[in-house]
Every structure is written in structure tokens, then in C-alpha cells.
Length: 154
Image 1 (tube, one colour):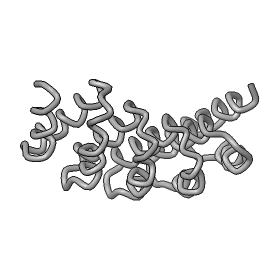
Image 2 (image 1 turned 30 degrees about the horizontal axis):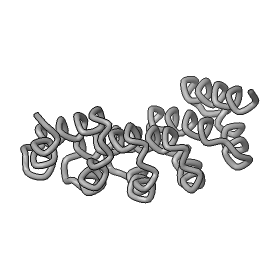
Image 3 (image 1 turned 90 degrees about the vertical axis):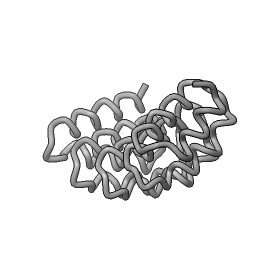
Image 4 (image 1 turned 180 degrees about the vertical axis):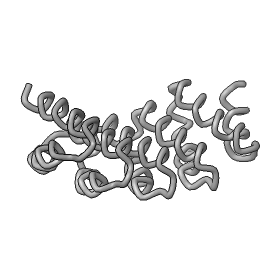
């Protein structure tokens, strides 16, 4: 599918088609996709929201940060994980407090991606939160916090 077809599919396809279109739009690296992908952050289908958040990070769409932050509180774990990962890839300094709050997420997968993102963003608040995350009950999260802190020290 070409760019125009993907944008139409993102807006009007089935759930699976919309999710695949969001993913493909990110891989095309065409910044014209930012606006339709930002609209897709509010899609009723969680796979579409998930893929749109990550595609926006692939496009380095810092203008989408404000739209991605609320996805840290999405009902779906995979969407929260992608939001956390995307905010780190975008180096979203204005999302640090929201990411720190997400270190309390019930999902270890979300917390792990939050820790990694805090390590990518850096700063005193991120460092302090990562130091606390070293005692996360899940070893995977604690390990991610350790790696993130090491990254901040180099």
C-alpha cells in the first residue's frame, strides 16, 4: 500500500487493518503521517493505539508527546508499555513526572519500559526514581533500572 492508501486504511479499515496501517506508516518515515497517527492515539482499538504510539516515536514526532502521555494510563497493558517506550525514544523531558508515576503500574512490562525510558531521558528526577526502582519486587524491572542508571552515569 502507498502512503495515501495507508492513511485511508488507518481512518476507516477494520481494527486489524488500522493497526497494520499505523505500523506501516511509522516504517515509511514520512512525517506527513504524524497528524493521522496522532488522531489514531484515540482509536477504540488498543492495537491501533499501541502501534500509533510507537510509529510516532519512529517518526521522531516530538509534537505527539502530549498525546502519548495519557496512554500511560490506558486500560490496556500493551498500550501503556508502548507509550512508555515511545516517550523514552522521543526523549520526552516533559513526560518525566508521568513516567515516574507509571513506575507504580501493576504491569512489570510497563515498569520495565518506564525504567528504560527514564534512563534515556535522564535528569535528577529520573535518576532518583530509578534508584527507588532498584528495589522493585520484580527482578526484571530492578535490572532495567540498574541498566538505566548505568547509562546515565556514562
